[in-house]
Image 1 (cartoon, rainbow, N blue to C red):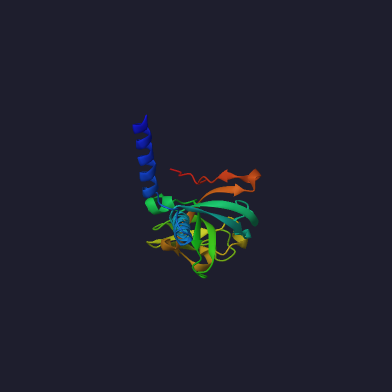
Image 2 (cartoon, rainbow, N blue to C red; image 1 turned 135 degrees about the horizontal axis):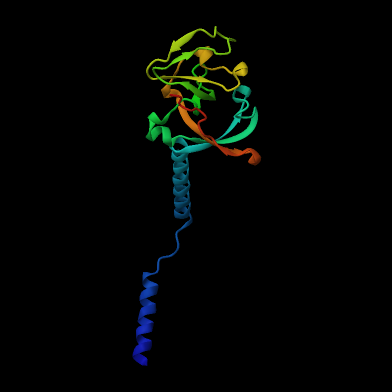
Length: 187
């Protein structure tokens, strides 16, 4: 029994000598700061390369998107992994070619090599005028053509200006939907 108590006493003595005091305040602040920086970096990488949530506004995409108050999810990853997945009819988010600070949402009408009607409505150009979409460019239009500034105004848009595809509308809740490409190939 005495040997057991002696062993326990030695174990406690050894435990006390190897016990490290908790981190001091400077170390705690440094660790917390490191965790915050890691979280900020991970968030940035996710929003820049995978997807993001955006607030949409403007009448150019009526009736697909309301003029204001809709929140959508942008899918950036699918275009990065498979740029060939871009198709006519896709809803995309691009940096405006005439105002680099503006981000716009439009529908893809023509891909590189397509011949497209410049303005089927005849509002901005004769409806008989056609253009060949050059390599590395796309032709985009808003769904509400009477209130849209798009390729009819500034011509083909470089593919490099594409930011993402629209994946879904999440707010308002009653109008939530996953966007599907409405275009069908006719033979």
